Image 1: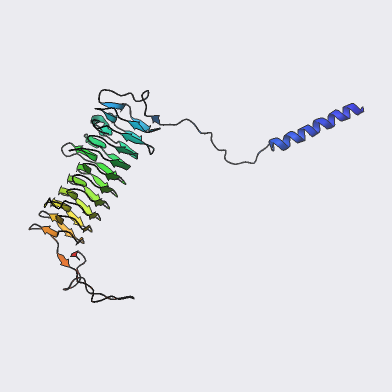
Image 2: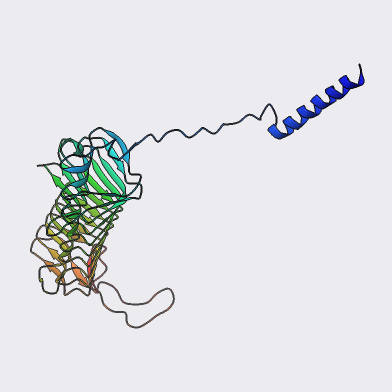
Length: 338
């Protein structure tokens, strides 16, 4: 072999080594391979995908999963988004829907759209009527509103979230929502659940239900009439109501419950009017009241006792001290004023 051939061969070998060093091994180790991100599987809310009509700036007319890619503003006289079909998930992705003084509802779910619909994760503010309006109908509506901020909705009517049910219907869940500065905070007509919500500064009452609903682990503060107001057959459990009511409105305060409700483990403090304004045939256990204009107002035929908790004999430090909560013996279901 001549010298030139040897030189070419050595050059090719060096080139191969150099390329291998740059590119890495030709046989990579075994293991999972990360997938290449695909297209967004949901449908964006926009004028092309969800064109509006005379009633709504955008209209969802097909079942599926939808999302916002930015803030949107409703047109005057219209709702922001109308959901007109069932089985829709609407994710606001942290964005905002803003109304005008004449815009009707931020998200309006009605007719066929009231079945198995979820609205989540965003801010709705400044609508003349409701932030989220659910016209519940059908055999199993099963609608959910969660992780929402609802502010300054409603003028002389309306709520941050309102569910209007047909006869015997319900099935709406509102959870982990903040409602502030609305006419009413959250109003579920019947057979719904309001869980872990905070309602502040409503013109009227903070949380309202007519019958057969569960209201639990919520905070209601500085609402104009009642913090929580129910009619019949509701369970009102583990809530805190502070500084609700109006000094010029005697029938206002913390919690108002009509008849046949279960009222348990709530705390009412510093409300104008009444801490608890209770009708008849309710079960009332383990609630506490302090600093309300009138702590308790209970009609006849309720079940429950109220005890004024005594003060401690003096200060103490250590493992034991103070006075018995019940002078005649401790009752685990007693309600207390202190």
